[in-house]
Every structure is written in C-alpha cells, then in structure tokens.
Image (cartoon, rainbow, N blue to C red; front, side, top):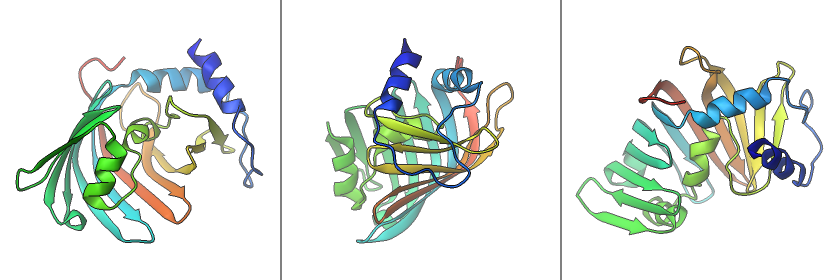
Length: 203
C-alpha cells in the first residue's frame, strides 16, 4: 500500500524537462531499497551544513544528529547563528530550540522557529527524509535516477534536492548520501555527511 501511494504521489507532480543523462524510470531494486531506507529510522550522523540565500549565508558543524523514529536531536556549532552551540529537539509539528546561553524557544511550526532564530528558511521535517535519499511523506514529488541506477534528485515542495555523492557507511545497508545540495530559487542548502551509524535496531 505504501508503495502504491509513493508511486501515485510521484506521478502527480508536474513534469519538467529531464536533465541530460537522467530518467524517471526507477531501477529494478528501488522498491526494496526505499523500503530498507524507510525502515532505517534510528540513526546518528555527523557532518557539516552550509546555507546560501539572498539575505545572508553561513555554515555550521553538525556535531550530532540523532534520529529515533520521528524524534530528532541536533547539536550544531554555528558562528553564523551568533549563538555558538545550538540544540534542536523535535518531531514533525513541534520544535524546541536551545541557545548557548540557555534561552529556550518552542514552536508548533519548526520551519518558522528556525527562520526566526537563524534567518534561514530550512525545511527541517522534510530534511529528515531527504537526508536518507527518500521523499518526505507529505507532498507530491518526482524522483530522478542516473545511468548508474542511483537516485540523482528529488523534486518536492519547490525544492530540487540533488544527491552529489553516496557512500556505503554501514554494512548490510544500501549506500547513504554523503553530500546533498538542496536548491529553491536563490536559496541553497548543502549537507556533507562524514559519518552515519545505526542506533539500536534500525529495521
């Protein structure tokens, strides 16, 4: 049933011309791969984050991103925030942001809270899916694959999420994204993941 809904949502996106060398036709193992990655819902990663937008730009170190099903916990070191160490804890529809001086902010609109604190438009709830190489469950999407049968891009929510590099971080799992570039108009988010590891039973 989930796969049927996945394909239906994919088909409903208005189609733009395909970039050279890409196809909308998924490889034969895509259903199994996406099922495995969907089940990979308890993990931790480290890496770097950079954002460029018309108003300002900046970068941050992701000291920890711990995901347990729908709940996430991020520790960022980010000079661009003007707050040093920043902690984000949340789930879809709710976020708590704690600054380095102990100030705590809560909101039922995570994206608006991140924007108010950092000035960045940051689709945090969707990013927990995109970072695994999966479309977010909310909203139509389009998947593009390269000639090596690897996912090259997801188009969703007005964003063009491009998977620049994949690595086999974890034995017995498909390759996971090592570098992602998300584009929306003049906004760009780039994520470089240096380490993935599972937490507990991830399947």
